[in-house]
Length: 102
Image (cartoon, rainbow, N blue to C red; front, side, top):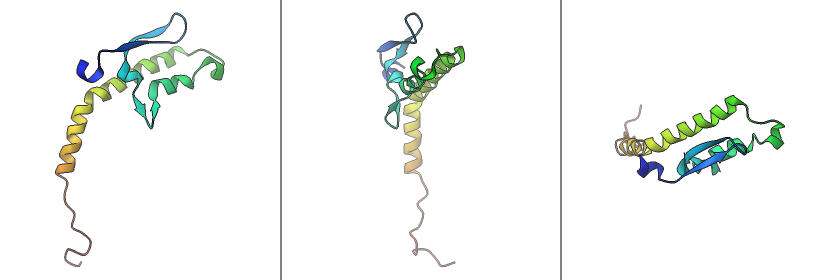
């Protein structure tokens, strides 16, 4: 697991006292379409934008998001292998015009 998630972690602070402790750095840095998922999600929920602090449900959402990203990272070797198996064993469709006419 360490080989996939790495040894480095960080604490992600909500405010001066509340934070998510030991979030794996690879989870924090995980990107989709060039955006860090957790960081981007939190940026849309800053007090200055919303005019309020995060709700308890939103705090849970971040923890759940981190868990899901962790699962994706841990599944990556099996997902990659599954892709290779599908790619290498895909049915080879005949080229248009190479088969019998209907």
